[in-house]
Amino acid sequence: MREDCDVCIVGAGLCGMNALFVASTYLRPDQKIILIERRPRVGGMWVDTYPYVRLHQPHPMFTAGNIKWTLGREPAYLATKLEVLDHFGYCLQQIKQRVRVEERYGWDFQSAEAIDGAVHITCRDADGQLHTIQAERLIKAYGVRVTPNEALELSSDRVQSVSPDSCDVRSGDIHESDTPVWVIGSGKTAMDTAHALITSSPGREVNMVAGSGTFFSSRDRFFPAGARRWSGGVSLTKMSIDMTRLYDGTNEDDVARWYRSNYGTSPTPHATHFMAGVLSEAENAAIVAGLNDVVMDHLVDVVDTNGSADLVLRSGARKTVAPGSWIVNCTGYLTKGEHPYEPYVSGDGSILSIQMRSATMHLTSFAGYFATHLMFLGKLNTVPLYELDLQDLAQKSKTAVLYAMFTLAQHNLSLISDAVPVRVFRECGLDYNRWYPMPRQLSATVRFMATHHRDREHLRRTLDTVRERFDVRCGPLVATPAGTG
Image (cartoon, rainbow, N blue to C red; front, side):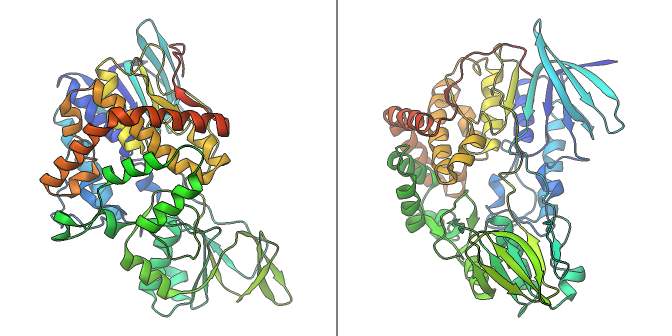
């Protein structure tokens, strides 16, 4: 049996909810959106992730469109997992007041084909039953495709290997134990885990195998609190303009040093990796004070030797750990999985795909918002946005990928600003400049509008250099057959 709708959206995370919000502003109340989500509810990765996760940005700008939060907390408050999920649910209810939305939870998208002005979609429900949907438009809001981490498979029988996604480090056996904990990784999950252990069990031995180390954006620099919102800190618009003017597609190491010295913070020494995570100076200080040992190397295995257990490291070194130690896997959320390439838009403009193989923005939430506007304005397949294969680039240069992402966003936002009504930018609640009072918001807007045309050629040259240097897909999308699924 076939279902018909005006729009089908696959994915109910932040990317999908922004696509849903935008679609609802173009449709009549009697028109229908079918929302496909493989999880049991809206929320995307927030449904699956570890229970002690918190937003690493101020919560008001983590939303669908311009829907305001109802927490009643100060803007700097970092919302908990449950509070974020509640907001997702609230956003859905607000959108359903404008347009008819039917959710299909537990369904997996299988395929799609654009034929004769309609998109034919096949999905499979939780019982394995196939369903067919016919829609005028399909938005595949895959986003980053974050999946839960599993515990590391280790050779040792003398350590306990766990994942934060299945082991709340603040309770249960790991909390009641007094043996050392080794956090594996140095990204945001590792910092959340270390911070949770240090604050919930003062005096507990907490260690970290930090790889090459990760540095973070200082929350205090970009989101100053209190009266400093009027005159302190640096707007992300200014930082993005400065960064992308400095980056030329060849000098990512120099840009990384510049960024870290001006805006970075890190609990690990000589950190080289950056994936746009945010950490406050207070969190950083608490983690530094609470960590017993930081090993700047990569874990390969843990093996039993002569009555003890040894960490086996990539460098060839070994480090003995106490029997009963806990090994917490906090690695690789953003780099797991191989996904096939697909263009971000089909030739006829009826299918939009938001994912890492043909990225158009630095954040998939922004892509869900702006690309959906372009789709409904009939401009998605005519505005020459650059697409960038972030999966491929991340495998070839973890350092370059972040600065290429920002360059991509600046370039494409410049094109979009010429193609959409002013209200599209004015109503974007994701804009981090909203942290600041209105005069500073207007100043940031004026700065972007005054510079984006003259910066565009440099941004284009930088992206072309990235394409040639790393042999990655990076450029304007050539029209593809309408039946891309």
